[in-house]
Amino acid sequence: MNTELARFNMIEQQIRPWDVLDPAVLELLSTMRREDFVPAAYRALAFVDTQVPLVPGAQAQAEGACMLEPKVEARILQELRLQRHEKVLEIGTGSGFMAALLAHRAMHVHTLECRPELARMAREALRRNGVLNATVHEVDAATGARGLAAEGPFDAIVLSGSVAEVPAALFDQLKPGGRLVAIVGDEPVMVARLFTGGAAHAAAARDLFDTVAPRLLGFAEPTRFSF
Image (cartoon, rainbow, N blue to C red):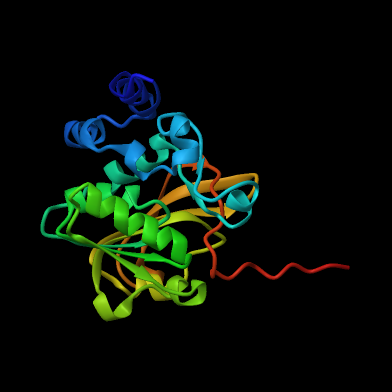
């Protein structure tokens, strides 16, 4: 595979058509080695418009262990409009690729992962790519869903997966005017939503695009009644 041609085609055929036009974001995507964050068994999928499994078999989707599509990662990165002085929290490290993108735009990234094997993989990939301003925290799923208040407040929070709704505790960890991006809803209808503000009751929300993403572990699901 011609890696550089595949990367170019990913940007021109998948990412630009999704209204990702920020020159700095496009430049970062053209230089960041996405293939270095993909498990060897799935390396051929590194630049494909699909979610890439991070663990073998059907287990990946069931446990939410997937990289999001390149266009989804790129659009989220663009919408956050990060500045070099800002501090970011990511929930759902996965491969570490989104953390690497965030770290190149911000001052520091704290990223939470509940699967020990993925936390190790992400740390190694970040180290190999010289990303020194991203810290991977290995936590249990329930702890991860509560964020990382000890390191807050944050200028931006990213949920790299879907949730039924965003917990109030995460809004409380945003600085005034901070941004939070999450994919919310239930299959088959989910939406990537940008929240701006601090406390949950004061956060303004704007829908960005429709998509479907694997669930993040540890987050509460709505009660389902049966008759």
